[in-house]
Image 1 (cartoon, one colour):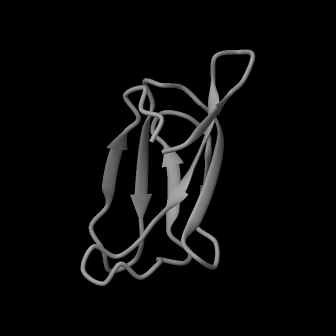
Image 2 (tube, one colour):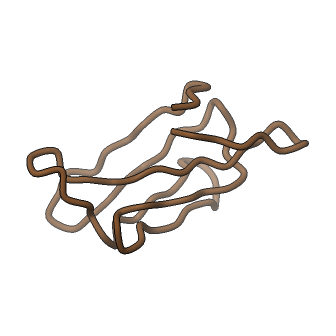
Amino acid sequence: IPHVLAQDGTFTVSGKVIRADSKEPIIGAQLRVLGKRIGGSTKDQGQFRIQKVDSRDTLEVKYYGFFTQTIPINGRTT
C-alpha cells in the first residue's frame, strides 16, 4: 500500500483490488476506513486512493458476491 505522509501524521493510501483467482481488477468495490467516515470505491482498473489514513487504521473492502475483507494498515507502506 503506497503512501504519502501529510503534516498531521496521516497519509494517502492507494492500491488495486483484484480477484484472487484470476487477478482481474474489481471495479466498483467499496472501501472504507473502519471507525471513520473515510472511504471510496475502485475505479475502472480496480484502483483506489483514500486520504487521511492513519497507520493504525483498518481498511474494509466490500463487493457484492464476495466476502468482505478487512486489511490492517499496521504502518505498512507497500
